[in-house]
Image (cartoon, rainbow, N blue to C red; front, side, top):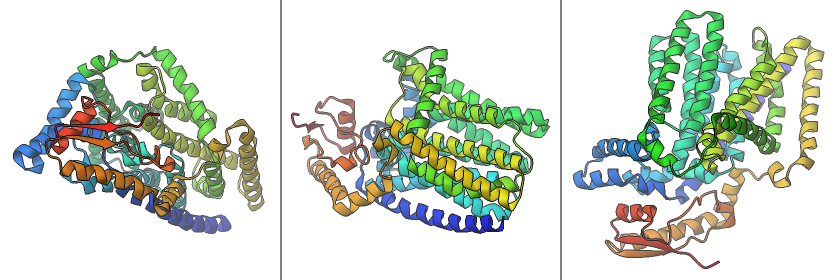
Length: 490
């Protein structure tokens, strides 16, 4: 194992440096984005309070009032609604441009936080393994996520989905720590965090509930009374929050505009959709990362005591938990949901694939036993299988889905080519008009969006209708009478 340990040390440094460097262009791109759509709509209560009092603290009760109102007329996701009513531009435009850096660091940080107690545990010799796995997992997530715009650069959609998924990862990182230290204060904090997470989106909440229930079941089998009581309470708060969210009167009002399906059909469709995601979204970066991590996983397996008794069942459970991310959307709307929901499905899919692959490596490695020659042959065969599997998938999938330009490269090219500047300048022109036309009717030209930035920075625009609710919210935020966008005829 000496060579594998040395390899793990080297790959951990390389992967961490690659991750840090890849974050830079994505974070810089944040300074070229701007608020849009619901960022203004949900800011109305807070901006009114701020104008009335001139005190930033007044936005808190205003956000609570807005959350209660939305609970009654629109949806019950109370925690998310509270945060929606406090968009960054309330405190200055610069904070909106800093936000993408915050969410990028929050997502990657949550992955590192969750995996530390799983890989390192109490063995400091496993720190390099933890860094290698966390870095490459984070790298794949941010490199291939389908819609950068909605997952990083649009506050409302990003916070609601990516933000709450990251909170769930933090939740499990804390839960794994509790299972090790059994501290009461940790359990109390987990209960509070569970209640907050339960007020977010259902796509990450359902997998969180199911995984917590699975861990509770395993704990019951182990007859760990202290952990059983704590986990039961944590699960109770998750379900309590879900109940509060579901019972919102606004859900019924909103549901009148959609046509859902039965629970059984929703579950079946989400499982099928989960299979499609795994087939279509695992590209070259996933396979290369798994190849690089195979020796690392072997090292972790070697340091892991005991075996996994039912690896196939565990893998199926992991897949079903991941697939449940789509169940609520199919049930309520009978479709797979918006791009921002796809983004967190992508993150969960990558995490699931990495986990299942580790289960496979650990199971086979434990079965063949230790030995220098056996370990070398096992790694070589595993790498060959990954290559063959990837090559076999090429003719079965569209080329653009198999070979994708990483998001970091798109960001770097956009910055160097001037596309990002060109896009941002158009918004600067709008803001100049806004600041020089108080209480007037203002018209904007539609954004001329470079193709590379469509769905990357650009996620939508105002309407040509001055009465549109987003147009009205934009006008109110900046003290205008009305606003509209002139779109060119196709």
